[in-house]
Every structure is written in C-alpha cells, then in structure tokens.
Length: 123
Image 1 (tube, rainbow, N blue to C red):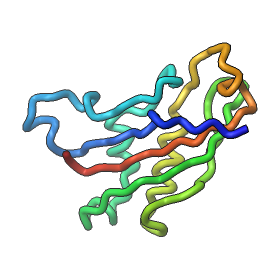
Image 2 (image 1 turned 90 degrees about the horizontal axis):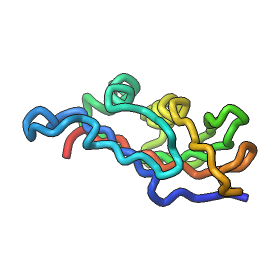
Image 3 (image 1 turned 120 degrees about the vertical axis):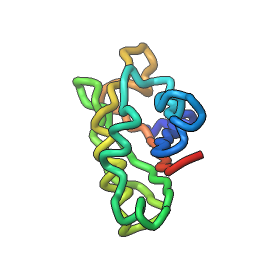
C-alpha cells in the first residue's frame, strides 16, 4: 500500500536567508513522519549546477520504501524538468531521511511512501 505524505514538501532556499535574518532551517518543512532529514546545505550541495545557473527551480516526486533501519530506498516517480538532474538531487537528499518509530502501520519497514521534494533558489 502506498502512503502519500501531503506534508512532505521540502524546500531549499539558497539565497535570501541572510537578507531576511532568518536561519536557513526556516526554509525546510520536514514531513511529520521524519525523525531527521536533509539540511539546507545538503540541498545546496546537490542542486544541479546547470539548473542553478539558469535560475531553474523544480519539483520531484519519489516513491520510497521504508527500510528495516528506518531509512528510505527511493526511485524517481516524476520530475518537473527531466534531464536537469533534479531527480538525482532528490534521490541524494532522500538518503538523509530517517522515519520515526511509530505504531502507524503505513510507516513500518517495507511500506511505501511518496516523497515530494521542491528545489527552490530563493523566496
């Protein structure tokens, strides 16, 4: 059974945090099921250079299986701009998620979650 996580949209802002005085962590909305996950610098590290130079932002959707160690094993389900590298970037940051221990049967090892990720340059 696939369990769509509507609150799992992640956004990485590469510019603007210093100008507003906000911390970079203000720009990532962690899904409620995540014990831990990527930080803004992780998004910056994997943001496709060609897309950054062209000012392109994107969304990807990953289909992920929860492993026994509570990490995710993901594959690309959809991406807004194919061939720009956002799928590879999304897969890279997905490895940083750890799912909380819970009694929720949809969040147990072996279950599938849909993980949408947004890559943004600035607000």
